[in-house]
Image 1 (spheres, rainbow, N blue to C red):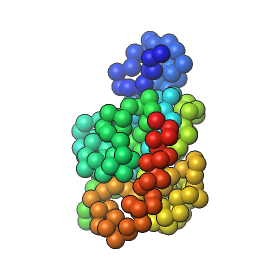
Image 2: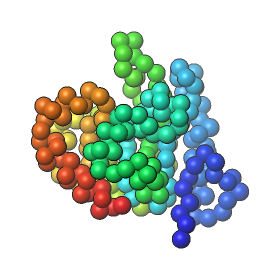
Image 3: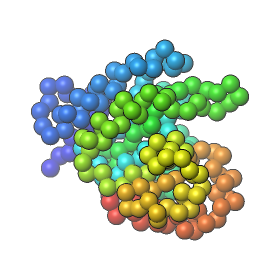
Image 4: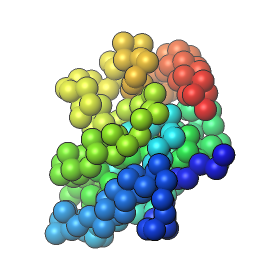
Length: 207
């Protein structure tokens, strides 16, 4: 049986069980709610399907993701895929793994460097509507502080990652896989020794 996955090229006249999600994805990709404050203009990036069992709730696209329209298409994606123990083909198979950032457009740079936080307007506008059309999600990876704060409320990322068992089987908190995390990993050997094996087991069980 062929699985249909929402994409920017989805047929607007298609009929089938994924139609509602495909229509919603087209609506999201046409969103201009934050256009007046986005330095590169709106380009919502997400990869979803009605059959995905894993959801990666990330932060917001960087410039390379904005340019290519492909989530985690950068060094942070390489690090995240390494944590998960999966290849690019599996990672980008939206029929199994959905990716939806808290802010779907590139938010711009801070005056002193680093990307701005995800736009606060985005998740309340779209997140619940998308999740309602993805009934097969069994595990959500909460990648970084913004995803964790939105879903779990205030708290320290390191504490949540260290105590990941408290959030299973529904959620698995993770640090953001930026270049800065490399130094943190070297200072935190428990992450590689304890957390990553459990993460890979949880993810592979659902693929």
